[in-house]
Length: 526
Image (cartoon, rainbow, N blue to C red; front, side, top):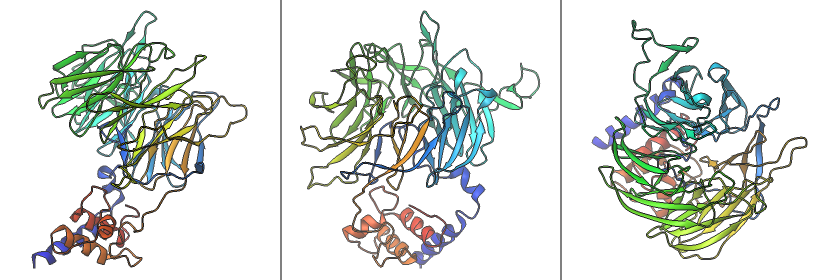
């Protein structure tokens, strides 16, 4: 009787969820909600990405370049079947299947994005960094502007925006000609908008009728934050900037818990592995044409937010990339740029002690944090993974790197070279690649182009959601998944893979619900 009640409840939920598009918007699941997919700042997916010998091909190609205005698009975030991309002075909502722009909304006060805009999604909102140190909040469904943060004396807002449980964390940067300045700050997105000069309850409005959201706290460090991004460790937020100091601060108050002085500037996001260890790059000259030293760091962090072990390794070239950490290995792109030696490595280190395993020579500097898929990893192939990076040379290529748990031999292949556009500049790109659930890779370059790329994908011998293997996804498949989730039935290995539609490595009632929703047309993909 109890099992029948569970089935009845699942069916009711499947029919109710998705009955109102507006209701779904606020809680819509985002496959890729932030710069490096999630707050670990490591873009690791279990989606099957192209691994064939042929070059990637374009599904669609969007041109955001208008009237010689800087319009290199941002990295996208993926919410449902839409991409959100900033280019020039607009936020764009794009159908990711066709590349069609569904809606556009202006950035505040006729501002534009900096040369980079690392937006994020949370709680039904898109948070966009805008020039002048502003964050602008949009409703993800309607594209209406909800509020902006207070104006600061900044010229660039280039850091990743990190969203966690209602709080935003980011920083800004300005070059005075003598030194760099700028702060890291926190915004409570559930706070009241700022009262006007203490009089009454009307919000301050810097740009017409748009309310201003106050900052909850700001860093004492005022040396500037450029490309750096935060990690969340329990009640602490971990961040660094041009001072080269790694900070651990109380995420709600900003009170400093611990600090660690590194060698040079921190211009990467702070990556965090499953053990809670922190990885990042730093060094002098990492933006000055790669002329000086670079380092990769591993810093332990305990439950209180205090730093424990500290290890560093020297890099052959400077790096501003997020390290990628997987299966005992650390992957770090780097390189010299705008010199007669436009060369680069991707170095592979042991994650225990940062000892070098081997180097991969890359034909140009990379400013891209890697995208890594585990979809093809098995015991038989020594957990083979594939990494994808862009190369910031005039060709703007994509390289794919193959590696496994015992490999010491470089395996790299150029898999995409964008067409040279007549009359436009070079195809340089600092893009960190983004992928969706179907294995499409999203790429952009400095010519204002954004492409959806696809290629040969080795398909598994099962269909996701088709648990009984009859060629259709029906309520019978949902029932099998549900029975397995409560111990009422056993699935074969292939059936387990087909039933795990949320890709969390186990079969639960959540998988059964998703399969049921698909079978009645309430969702169109897993």
